[in-house]
Image (tube, rainbow, N blue to C red; front, side):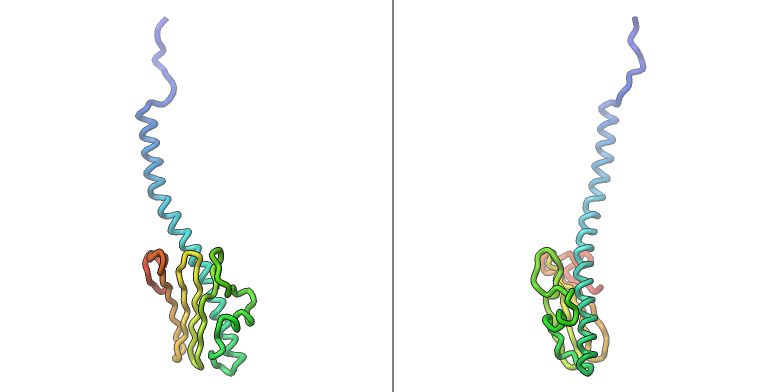
Length: 146
C-alpha cells in the first residue's frame, strides 16, 4: 500500500497568510470604528444645541425680538425635552446666554466636546466645536466649526 498524495487541510503557511490578512483588516477597521463613535456622540450634542437654538428664537419671538431672557431654565420651559441637567450619559445644554440682539447656546457631549451656536447682532450664525478633553473630538481636532 502506498501513501496517498492527496492530503487535505491547510498548511501552516496558508493559515499564517490568512491571519496576517485578518490582522491588517482589523488594523484598518478599528480606528475607523472609534472615529464613528465620536461622530455619533457629537451628533447627539448637535441635536441638543440645535433644539436650544430653536427654543432661543421662540423665546425672542415671545419677548418682542429680544434674546435677553435666553438662559437654560427659560429654554427648558419653552422646550421641555431639552436636557439642562449635567449628565455623563446624555448630551445636555451646558450654557445659554443672551442680550437684546445676540445669544449663545452650548451643549456638552458625553466625551466632553462642547458644541456652540452663536447669533450675532447682525443676525449671522456661527457654529463652533471645542474638544477640551480629548483634543481631537471635533472632526479630529481640538477646535472646528460645523
